[in-house]
Structures are given as C-alpha cells and as structure tokens.
Length: 272
Image 1 (cartoon, rainbow, N blue to C red):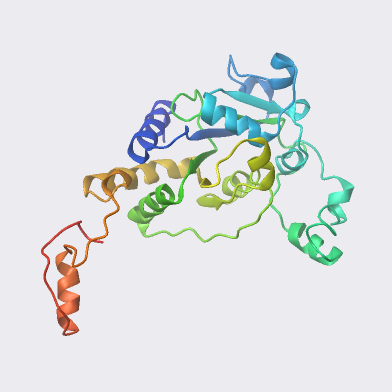
Image 2 (cartoon, rainbow, N blue to C red):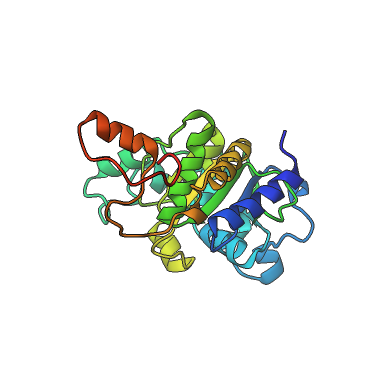
C-alpha cells in the first residue's frame, strides 16, 4: 500500500520528469472535519471570500496552497451537488439548465446530464486539495494540468504496466467534476477539457488539459514515467527536428525490407 511519503515522492517525480508548469494536485473527499489537516485554508472562514472549485484547484497548483472547500466556501453550483455536499437543484433535475442557450431542445438538455457522475447527497462535507509533493494525506485522485505533449508522455506511461489505454467521453462543462467524481467511483484514468468557467475565472491556459488518475494508480503511472525516461523516450528526451532520412530503430528497417522498400539510417530512439 502506498504511503504518504511515497505519494510526496511521486509528486516530485512528475514535476521533474514532465517539467510541469504547476504542481500535481492531490484531492481527497472529506467526510468530516477531522479529515482536514492543520493549516488548510478554509476560504470563507480564513479569508472572508468564496471560490469556485476550479479557483481552489488553481491556488493549489500555482500557489501550492492546501485548501478545504466546504459547502459555505463554494461560489459555483456544479461541484456542490456532484461532490455530494447537497442535493441536485430542481432546475437541474428538469434538464433546463442549458436549454435553450447551449442545447436547442429540452430533451437534449436532459439527455446530457441524465447519467452525469455524482456522489450521493450528504456523502461528503467538502473536498480537500494540496500539492501532491507536500500533501499530508493519501489522495483519492490526482489531477495533473498538462500540455498535449506532456499528456502523450502520461498516456505512454499508462500503457507500460498492462497495455492500458484511456477511453474518454468529452464534455465542455464541469471540469471540476469530470476529473474527480467518475475517477474515484470507477478507478483508472481520465482526460478532461477545462471548461469556459475555468478559463474565465481560474486562468487556465488555452494549451492545458487535465489528466487525472485514481490514487491507487499513481504507483503504476510513476513506474511508466520512470521507465520511459530510462529508455530515453520520456518527455525530456523528445526534441523536435525536421530531418529527412532520419535514423530509425532496427525494426523499422526490418519491416521496410519485408515490403521491398529502402532501409538504412542506423539505430536510434529505442522502439518507437
């Protein structure tokens, strides 16, 4: 079983080997106040203001703050019921939250959110976020804000252990919900597009995506990240170069020879 100390080390590995611009986020769903670590920021109590959850994630990954968001701290409705802090509002149940502005039919609006992931109302009192490299708790899920090239390295790392891939349904809403709730419920990994609210209010960059992994998958992910670095296929080892007749691994030449095509160029870059 992974220890808190090991999770901290994993956070440092991810930052160093992927050159992440911001810290990976350790996330834990809170069932009672005793789970809140000493020194964690409670926005309403400690600072006298409210935050959207995406803003709390931004403060954690950019400013490296540990933040506990309870019901009274929230300034955005989506995560409040998705996280199980309260019940789903009637307007959401009726399916007209995005009708007709974003979805032209009421039935289409109902369909979009009919099976959306959510915890049972009252199952949690809040959500805790901290930089993975310094978190004093074991995370339920880890969020990594990354660019597409870093995402490719993460997906290659997922492949290494068991040949797993990430199958994804993309939604343009709820980027505080989709990387958290279904990953905790089902395990595994997820990729999320930051939504418009996160772009406007939490200053997410246009080239950022959210990769998330359940806490029990982080050790496997790190194994893959380290392995790619060892075989010189990690994020730090790939450099753009427009070069005709570039050096190729031997198996390229073997395949081309079997097709009666040109070979040559010598051995390079491992097995890709």
